[in-house]
Amino acid sequence: MNPRISVAMATYNGEKYIEEQLKSIINQSLQVDEIIIRDDISSDKTDEVIKQFIKDYNLEKIIDFKINDKNLGYASNFVGALRETKGEYIFFCDQDDIWINDRVEKMVEVLEKTPEALMIGSEFEPFKCSEDAPDVPKWELAKFKNDGSLEKLNFNSENIFIGCQGCTMALRRSFLEKIDKYWYEGWAHDEFVWKMALSLDGLYFLHKVTLKRRLHSTNVTLHKEHKRQQRLKYLTELKKSHEQTTRFIIDKYGIENNKVRLLRKHIKATDLRIDLIQGRRVFNTFTLLGYADCYHKKRSIPVELIMALNKD
Image (cartoon, rainbow, N blue to C red; front, side, top):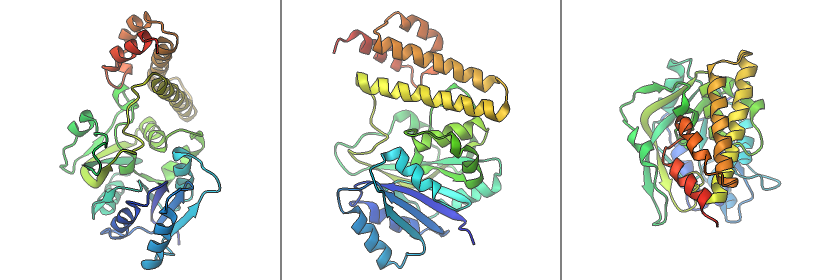
């Protein structure tokens, strides 16, 4: 019998917090059927902690833990774990958070009651465990209501940009099977499923805190691209993901619809932004004022102009 509820987790040097996270998963009010953990050749004792945890709690039939043959990087490591899950519902999981006791129960309930929901994200409660931990963006926290309501996210310029933490996401296996071939090496797993679900009108957000999000100096997704080369890398990857999403929509619907037209506008804007910074074409700024809706945050307009003007 195939498992009903799966958890996909990618680990790397997570010995400090992994046991607390695993305890919060196995103590859920609605039990998960499998936890797929793939470690990207940690240099600490992550593997020892996980193996001991499996032994102490007799979880050999639930936790599937393996160490990669080579270092894959965060995105590929996570997708590797994701592809090995078998459950009808799949939960994304970071190595260092703490799940609220009824996280699985509440999110599965939403998926079962809302068949049109292909992927859902949720709210979280942030807490810092180091002085140099990054802050969660204020715009993200401002959207939290924690009232249990479910919001459908429509395809528009604002929602083209990923709007929730990957660690809060859960999705259907049937959805994953439809989109899997469109993932490419290096595409962040959370942005990938976000854009695919948005394209299929199946992206939802649950206004309920379902986990405690641990903030520390090594959080992968919360550090900003304030340096020139970091920003160029971000924009290059952003353009690539827009292009792949466009291919997916055209393959799905077979026509140049409004979604494709909006994505093409975003691609053009991203090209102009790259050219502004890389080619120092400051006059692009004037053109980009007509693409203001293609920025995740409007403050990026002056920030990138300054990057173009600086000679470092």
